[in-house]
Image (tube, rainbow, N blue to C red):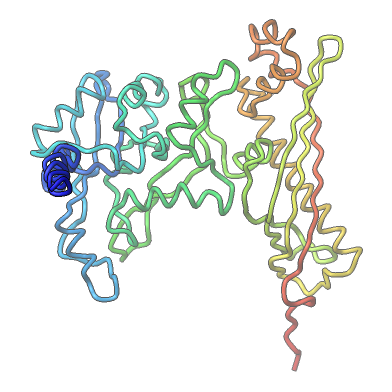
Length: 395
């Protein structure tokens, strides 16, 4: 009898502890945002472009034989609205979108060049305050209008935002543009010495006869002074920046072949690291940048036997020279602007905490005058499956 009573009590109590998904929201009632574009108009208003999923089209294409990406219609709907602030523009989107916008699945944020020059901090204030916006969303600066980037279609992806996300991750392959999330940007914006930098995107024309007339491509690095865009680094300068920061993951270094300088050799970057050592002598600032890189012989266009000790050593020296040149290019431009992209100020703060407050007062000028020594140690490890070049037999 006691056992039965206990069972009855448990049955009565279960409904109170098994509450289920009380606050769930059905997909059919939401507009899932995949990409956000922010532009600034001449009158100061915010032009907001949202890329929204169309679940019915996604479902239709995913059921295709072989997992194809075809379908009867577009998988996204692009909505453009204006407002006095970003939040105001988001609310104005309800005049066109009959569902509540869900931002927690957003993949990328693109800011237009005009808006970036005016200052990006006010445009991102909402992202700090609203917990729904993803801090891990990738962020880009458009050379031109962000709206054009968000509206651009992609040959491979049904959802263009996925292609932009893939472009952000693909920066690791060449290391000629940084990979930056919203969280990374927020950290750099609050720094009093280091300046933000973001990857750039641009629309380029495609050959005639193709379905899509323009495609989105990475285009170097946008550099900021505090929160305002001041200029761009090209691919070479961008990788120079990443060498110093120790963020080069992979890439190809092309050098001239020893004993056949009209031919090229491609060296693959396998791993790299960096060390920044600040010094202060009689008030003069000096920084030593040490970069260690290990690579493989990936390809050669010459018929020279590169495995001989002499030619192998010559390749390593050429590889080190290219790295040195890339770092110098980035440092020269940054010092010309007076913008510390390399976190030298952080290193001085760490090593000279007592002297740092005085340095910080005029860090822009101090950074311009830092004497920088570059030391590169580049090594080659492997030559691949073949130790000799492919040599066609002469008839």
